[in-house]
Length: 292
View 1 (cartoon, helix red, strand yellow):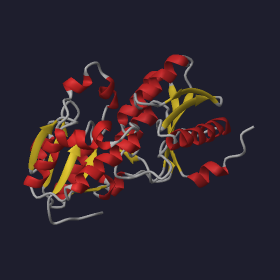
View 2: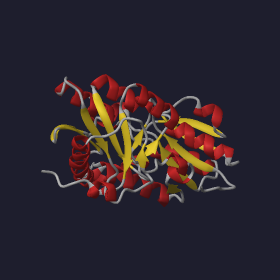
View 3: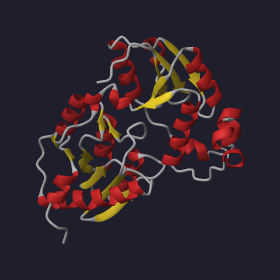
View 4: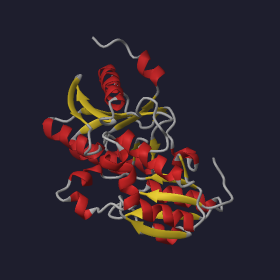
């Protein structure tokens, strides 16, 4: 675990993860200066953090000034960002970008043409580095949130389900390499849904809609060469609740590369609803018999 005797900046998106990171840092005696993405971050961060301010996603100049004013030279990002907001009607007017943002992200000024996750987030990190603010992985502050290898729940897995996991795992890894998404839902080695910009929960719901009989498997993995500073796979009890509602019965995640929030509550809920949750590595996947 990283311990620092100075202030750390936090850019907080949606969900429990930014709150957990902020609490872990304050427990280490670190002063957290947080920027909450409007419409995403939990307002409780205001009570946890040494300094807090709401910000729009495209207000990069405000974000830089906030961190510099508070003496922040190291920062981290945590929480989900709903990327669909970029495609809303009149998005540029609603999320009016400032000059700093345009300088790095608008093709006319920056030459940037690729809008996939890796390109956008790498540019975001480069922007802050230009102002002396270095981004660190949020998992450095809460490494225990990375799930360890093993079957987390009571329900045993059949050979049929393990073959589905291997099939979906290899597909999800390829999708991640193309920067499409991290999750794939399958049944009987038939692809039901692939995650894109909508996120894992909507991918699971779509699989449930297309497979009303249920009993399908969801696999969520990190991208090849995953940059742990951003877009790290994460699950929480909400993921399992969506699985139950949609009819999914198996969730396979990547060990040591996936954040699991509220693990004890998640496992209890999964066991109560007869949903299997397993964390695997590449060696375990490769050990599964060849797909026929």
